[in-house]
Image (cartoon, rainbow, N blue to C red; front, side, top):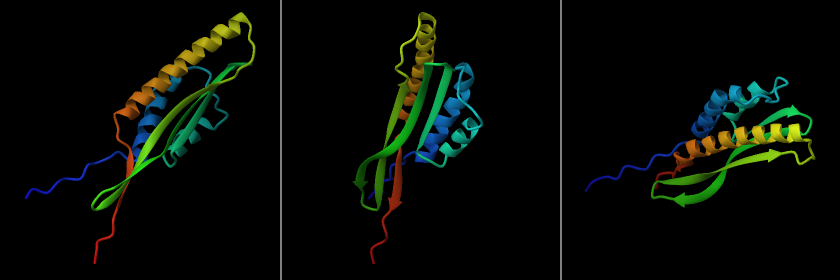
Length: 140
């Protein structure tokens, strides 16, 4: 009888490594990221967490944020292990103030760039099956 090889999954950390690498590669292409010394720490800390938020601001009333989180999904009991599937959530937020024509055009351009980055991150994570696996204790 042939032994079945257990399915392998990407961990939350591996998924966040992909998110951070994608953001690092594309951040220079989207001007206006709010830094204040927190941006590098946010990216580094994301590797130990299951969420991250980056904000952009080009002028008053022209800003948005990109949030990525990897939350709890379904729980699957296998013969020798428990699989905690994870669910990805990518969201874009923006201010909803009135703007003049120039600010509106700047806001549209920013939202488009951030939305494209969000879609790229979603497509990278969609190729990964993310789960945390816990081995069941051996029966005595």
